[in-house]
Length: 341
Image (cartoon, rainbow, N blue to C red; front, side, top):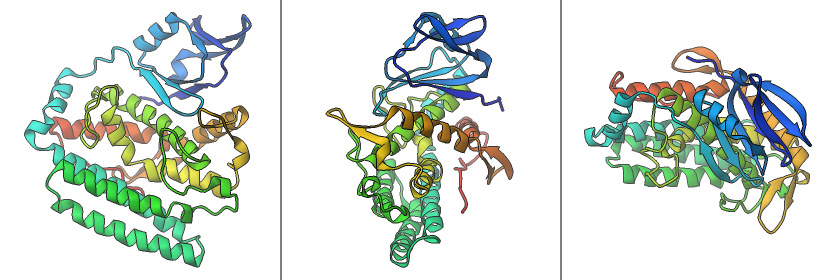
């Protein structure tokens, strides 16, 4: 298990980033603002229009540092993954997984993890909810349990995708019941994307994008092709396998962070601004949320399979290893991450 280093967020448009004596140098008005040792970087996330030298791109390529470009509204522009050659034999088996028929079991277990984690987040929130909200949450938890029970009977990936869509609709139908805020501007209402229609969906889309980058880095680092997915069909430019891995963590990592931030009033409508392009966090609020996000990912959690504590940011790497083991045929089933209340 390689050491997981830090994610560097570049949020200022007027910065120039280049390599200088083994460090990442951030410059403004031709003066160095700060230096960061390149050996301490796992990923660089660039918001907006910061300028990056070709030497930085070359160094990131050689040292397996993922570069992610995100708009100020949280839309993914793209990634620079570089020539991460990985394991050719592993990727060959990944491409042939469908031919073996083992992709259905793989997708089924990913959804088992997603639905179980979604249900457990709902059950956890129901304990602290008002009577009316708790009733609604427990009812949806029961319906999610029914979806989980149905999974072994589903025999095709297309049918599994339908089950996933139905379960996700149930989960999001009570998202507002998990929020304890009188700030109507932070209401969820319904899932909306491209563009998000309200503040809650805007922060959700932003963090889903960032976490997808984390998952892409984990999968590429283990030697898998992040573009060849199974639950998410292959589509030009989409990191489908990273999207597959994200599904296990949406509720128990990303959504739980958002719910906590809103319920503690650490995130309010005053943190957002809207224009003709969409809704985004104000600059100071973005920096604060990113700091809280990194602190949150650094918190330890017990991995149910290994029965050891790991920082949450290492979880995609642990699951990527398990995915690789299943694809190679080293283990008979892929064990999804199972979050417990």
